[in-house]
Image 1 (cartoon, rainbow, N blue to C red):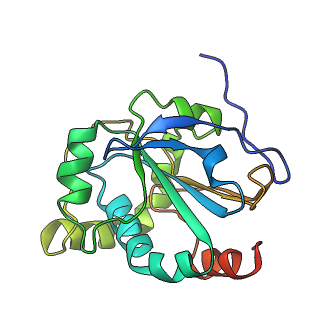
Image 2: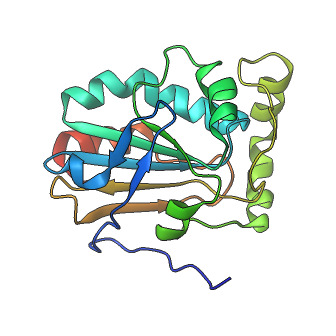
Length: 189
C-alpha cells in the first residue's frame, strides 16, 4: 500500500460522498456556505472515541447556532456504531456518523496508523481504566485498527480551504473544545 500523504492547511479539502449510519447521503459539497469539522475516530468500541463523540454531542447546539456542522467517521461496521455509539451516548449524536471500515475517506485525508502512538497514550490509562471499571464508556469490540490515530479537520465555509488540520499524537488526542468554538465563532482557529 502506498504511503498516505498528510494534508496541509490552505489545501483544498478532498470532496467525498458516503452514506451515514442512518442511511442519509452525505456529500461534503452539500455543506457549501457552512464551516465544517470533520472528525476521524478509531473504532466504535473505543471508550476514548465515545467520550469525544459525547463531548461533541453536548456542545453541538452551541456550534450549530454559530454555523458549524460536524461530520464524523468511524472505521467500524454500522451495527457496531449503533451498538457502542448510539447505544451509549446521551444525548444521541445529532450529527452524521459515517461507517468507513475500508477507510476510504481516512486514506483520502491521510489519517494513518501509528503503533508508536501507544507510548504517549499511556498517560491516558487512568481515564481508560476509569471508563472500563466504573465509567459509562466501556471498552467494546475492536473492529478496526487498534493503531489508528484520530484526526480532525476544520474546513472553511467555501468547502475548499482547510483552515486547521489536526493529526493526533496518541489514541485519545483530539482538538480542544475551545479551539472548535473559536473556529465556529470566527471561522478560523
